Image (cartoon, rainbow, N blue to C red):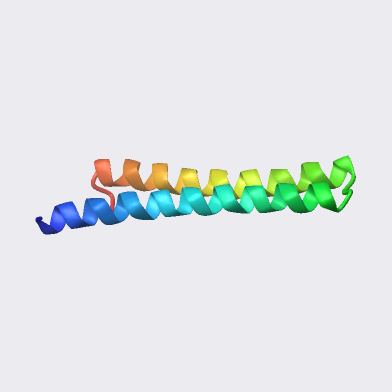
Length: 73
């Protein structure tokens, strides 16, 4: 394999790892919220924070791809 192919595999693997981590964090938070009798306001706030974290991660990736396509990075 060429170094470019290794880099591509590393990037894909890292992105899949982060997706799995976000999934497991979400499942753990869901379990804690259900067992802790958290009010609706608290649940909404927790899920909003989790969503914004995921959204920030995705936005960073899209911005990075955009910059690389335009030769800015």
